Length: 330
Image (tube, rainbow, N blue to C red; front, side, top):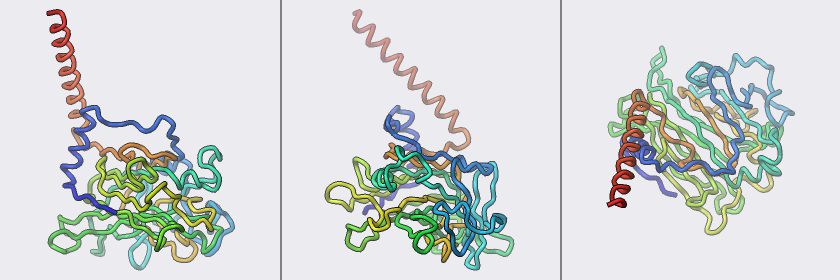
C-alpha cells in the first residue's frame, strides 16, 4: 500500500496540463458503464434511495421500510445529492444504492464476479466546511460508499468493499479551521489474504470545492488505485500473481448492491453515512478506466483556458507541419 503526497492545486493543474498536451487516454473501447447517474434533482440513473428498516426480504432494498423517505437525510438539488446529519453522532442515514443483479447478466457475470475482479467507481463530491445553526460542523466523518450482498442476507447485507471520508485537521490540529482537508481511504475483504481486510491507501481533497474521485481495481498497473482529480494519490498491490476478486467466496453475493453511504448491515447499524457532502455524476464501470474516470472538475474560467490551450496546440502543430513541408520542398 502506498499513498502519494501531492499539493492539491498543483496536481489539478498537472492533470489539466496532461489533457492540454493530448495525453489523456480514453477508457477501453470494450468498457461498459453499468450505471451513470447525475444525482441531480433526484436522478439516480437506475439507483434508488433506501429506506430505514429492521428487516427486509428484498435483496435490492427498494421495497424495504415503511416508504417514508422524508426521514432520510438527503437533500436533492440541481447541484447533486447532499447527505445531511440525522443521527445523534451527526452522521447521516442517507443511502442511494445500485443493484447489480438487476442488470443483464452479460454486463456483470454470474454472482457479480466479473465486477468484483475488475472495475471502476467514480463520482464528484464537495465537502462543506460550514457550521450548522447549533455551531456543529456540517461535515461529519462516515462512509462514502459500501457494497453488500443483499439486504435480505446476513445482517441485512454484509460488506466487503467500502470507502470512508474523515477530517484531516491540518498543521494547527484544530477542526473547523481553513487548513482542514478531507481524507479519503478505502479497503476490501479477500478470503485468500491473511487478515482478510486490506486498506488500499488514502488521498486528500480540499473543502468547499468540487473534486472527482476514482477507485479502480484489477488494473494492468496496480491492483487498487485511488485517483483524485485525475492524479494517482494511492495504490496497493496485495497480490503477488493474478488479481483475486474482492469479497468472501462464501458470500456468493458480495457486490450485489453498491451504494453511496453506509449499507453495511443496514437493518442493524447502517446509519453511518458521511454528512455534509454533496455527490454528483456517479459512474460504475465493469472495466478499469484511465485516470480512474476522475479527471478534474473545471473551475470558473477553466473551460476558456482549455479552449485557448487547445487552439494554441493546434496553431503550434500547424506551424510545425508547415515548417516540415517547407523543409521537404527545400
